[in-house]
Image 1: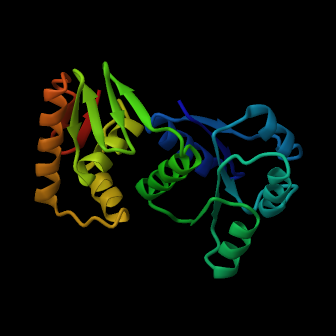
Image 2 (image 1 turned 180 degrees about the vertical axis):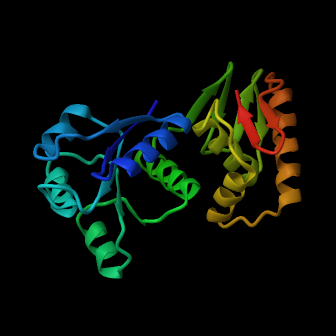
Length: 220
């Protein structure tokens, strides 16, 4: 389970982020000692930071600059500002992505998943219920055979695997497909889910993708 450290002094937002990340099958951590923020980060060793620019005792951008001297941990800068110069400064200081408040929860989760994927480029294979999935080739390996997935099926399966054991809404899947420059309408999404489900069944994984009526899908 990926550990995500929340560095934010707004207690209400911290609680919202904590619940959002926990429900998305991440392990949320909260920074409480802002005076020793850098030391805390290095001790906790998170897989990703959600870093607000305006935090007590030290500016978020300065903290990021100091962090980059010792760690390449992925960082998404979170701020209420919405000026181009802030984005430029965040990226120039070493942020991997940048999002402004208020933001949609599903968009933040998509950004987190994308940054985590980019930070682990060598992860080629996923193991799932006795089968292997080759992400780079876009195939399921089962019974000494390769089951080829389409690009959309691969995107959907990758997202479901990244959010295993929680409900993924249709809107989330539509968004991740759109962000990958593959437009897909609502009916086409249903077709892709059906085809992916059939391929998982043929690989020996029946009932892998469960439909939750009026909610979405869950990969158990």
